[in-house]
Image 1: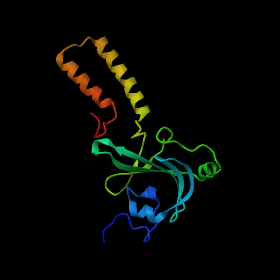
Image 2 (image 1 turned 90 degrees about the horizontal axis):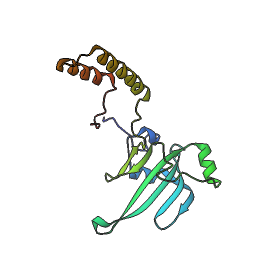
Image 3 (image 1 turned 90 degrees about the vertical axis):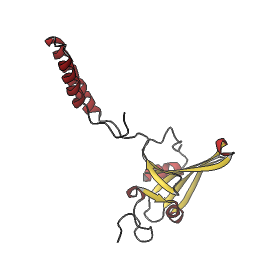
Image 4 (image 1 turned 135 degrees about the horizontal axis):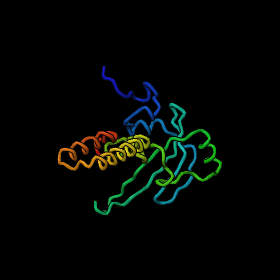
Length: 174
């Protein structure tokens, strides 16, 4: 038997535990709680996952793709909410506007017929590791300057040692 995400009716996993969420699953599981804002191009609403009880802020936007002959496209985003946020928004408090106020990971639809998680902050860098590396680099450069070693071999060794000070690069970094 193949492993992987199960159909919602077999096992109602929280959406946060799924890397890819089929659009069909969302149609089966999500129930509208309250429309917060609607105009001809945008929609914000509270929705609830009927299988798990999780709440989301659903943002939908209609877009005319002029490069594709003015084809109409719809994009959907689902931001997980805490219980207190749901109550607050349902009672009229200002809700999070996309994209400026969406700082936590959220689901967004794509061309594959489903939704994937997107983190607007990306992989947060390890600030402490970079600060430590910067301090070590400063010490290495000061020592190099004091020693007065300016030969090609010394410079090569300094550059190699410097490269090892910093955290490894992510595969998509240059």
